[in-house]
Length: 205
Picture (cartoon, rainbow, N blue to C red):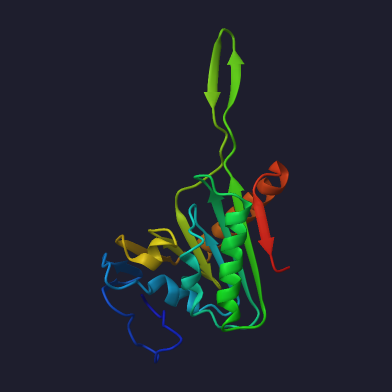
């Protein structure tokens, strides 16, 4: 990927194993013997902020992705959805594990983890017919914002650690439109979270 460099390598060095570079697209071919490092390395270039929007999380695996984040005062925001019985304890475990990982390299940072509960189904009766529907404002795409650079992520964070699935990462260069989209999406869901009073947020602030 153009001008994305692991902070622990020399300028211009390529990423590690199994990557093919197609302009602004970085592809990882599934290989269970080696973990992918592209997501982790991209996080490592952050100088001021990281915004992650990912509909799924694994509190046991995701912290590994933050091993290369070493910039003091970095601001990190994560937005996800609680599914499959996950609750505030799982969200707190994710927050704590990422916080502890960051503390190994930096002393000052802001970390915020938002996680929404999906809303239950409700019935609306129209005439003699009852319609069931589920007003869930959720998404399936994965987004990443690093400073002022926007990325579309082809797989969730836990897959970016395990290497069990092939996936791609694409940097969107559109004069900042995708950056604003990601920021607006994050703010929209945070506002909905506050209004619904559903889900949880853990933050260092």
